View 1 (cartoon, helix red, strand yellow):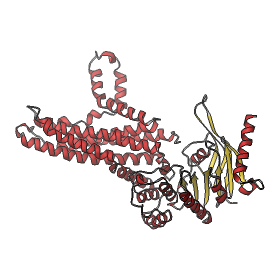
View 2: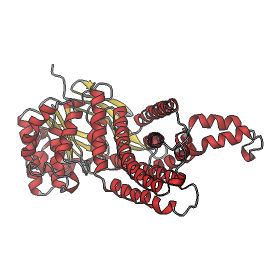
View 3: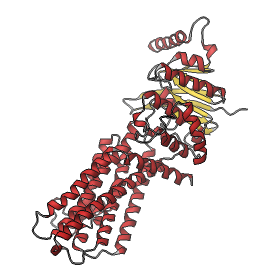
View 4: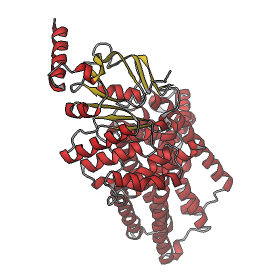
Amino acid sequence: MTIPAIEITGLSKSFGSDHKKNQALTDLSIVIQPGEVFGFLGPNGAGKSTTIKLLLHFLKPDSGSLRILGHTVGQDEFRHRIGYLSEFPFFYDHLTARETLLLSGRLSGMTRQAIDQRLPMLLEHMSLTEAADRRVGGFSKGMKQRLGMANALVHDPEVLIFDEPMSGLDPVGRHQIKGLIAELKQEGKTIFFSSHILSDIETLCNRIGIIHKGVLLYSGGLRDFLVAGVGLEESFVRIIEEANRASFA
Amino acid sequence: MQALRNIWFLALSTCTEGIRHRTLWAVVCLASLLTMANLGVTTLYSWDLGKVSVEFGLSAVAFTGLLLIFFLGMKILADDLERSRIFMLLSRPVSTWQYLTGKFLGLAMILLLATIILGLSAALSMRYVLWLYAAFVPPNFSWLTCIMALACQWLSLVVVLALSVLCFSFAKQPFVALLLAVCSYLVGQNMELLRRVVVENPQAGALAGQEQLVIALSWIFPNLSLFDKKYEAAYGMAFSGQEFVLLCLYAISYSALLLYLATLLFRHKEIA
């Protein structure tokens, strides 16, 4: 039996104290198999980023368990096998793109030689070759996003976790990142990415999860979710509205 | 081995980031001007010119170091959290203690560099004053003692830096961390004096009868006055190598303890 790439079981998380408790996630369970591209959908504030931060152990769960490649999050060391891109990638403004990638590679346990071999290809792929020796502080949003992507891929990880990878990008930038995710999919990487840009999810994902107010409304194949003759957007809006009606009733 | 490597890479990147930061150079320029002002300030006095020059030079270094810790060091640490840069680092196989130690060492390296630059600048101005007013050169004046005093100054800054890292590890707002660090510095600077006043004087005002409390506090806060060797340097007083080694050990062990506590506290912090 194959070990799931990502396995989330009964995950709950709340913020704040007893009187002002905000339940961010309730009993969330998701299984993602190796090689899958899983799109994590939900409106703003649904709990997508919280789930990702729990997966990376930036936050600690109230209950439930998280496993990546068979390793328990927060107990075993597996982070050299995952690549992460945050929604707003920030870097050290005064380091160059090359120095940033070098730092990330070294922290992931790569040798200087291995990084030197991989960097030109990665920079070329992200159209950053000419900007490689420029300080990151002067980069545009799109360049930072591409650098963030290079940063997530520098150590050639098996599992990729992207938080809103296309957020705030212009159409050209979005196209580039989309193309890259499609390539990674072909290479057999496991990709977990959150987004609320439904057209991107429709093109790239095998399976999707829909989360609303911290509750998972759907997890399964993209095709199974789409109602005959209705697009993803309409199906998505319908399931969210149904959930809203149910919560008011 | 990878742990040590991680610390080194983090320290190196923090140091590079700090060195290229405009704040560092603005503060260093200001301090160089301040040290050069030594020439003007010293001539305002009509006696002990050598002592004034040495004390003023070393004080300028200490003042600049504090500015660097509170405005550059704590900014770099706070930006890591506020601008989510920490995600880039902690999504890799880097543990909390490696992160904090790497940051601490990187900032300590910046302080060392600034101390060397400012020390040289202070030495130049001191050399000029001592040459101009040769009659006021303290007997037994030694440049070695001055260098040792400068090194003690740096050690004191390293302890204040460790205090700042500790405050950063548990404070929810960077401003609170800054405030706590400044207060701890002021307490550390005056703790020994307070302890002596209370212990040796039975009529110590509001603190009379609180000797045990003050002694306990003096064990908790760092004794920063120990590192102040300006007086010895200015008067050319003997400053033994053994005392210097003990001060080094004190600074290293106290900073290590603070970093350990910072790690314990930071582990409980949720990075949202």
